[in-house]
Length: 137
Image 1: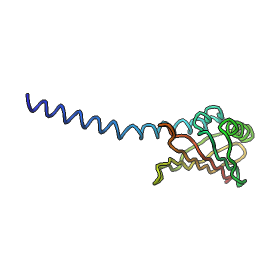
Image 2: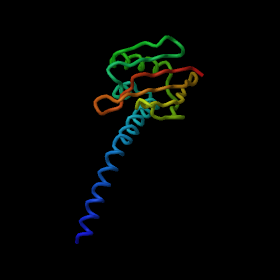
Image 3: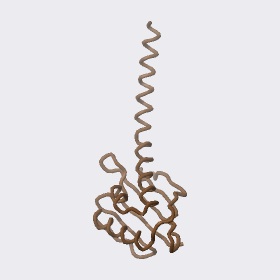
Image 4: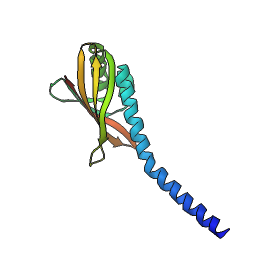
């Protein structure tokens, strides 16, 4: 019985440790997955759910501009209407030394393709987009 109690305590501690370390990874994956789905669908409304309060957007070499989340949604709606999506795929993603998530992807539209760099920061326990850079290929 004593061995069972030790086993139960050890198992409980291991389970808690696994859940604590897996939580951020699940949140990171969920955050980037919702962005990927919104980009693939060309849905500015769905994408805006992942925006931080301010989002820096760079379109095809123009100077980066910071927008409120509402303005950024409008900018992306305009971009999607001019560049209807065919596909969006993430080619590489990771986490920076400072804990920011990033993804490098390819946005394919009827008018051409773009290399896209998306950076997300943790805010209030969620990862939110703080910058997007679209470079026409």
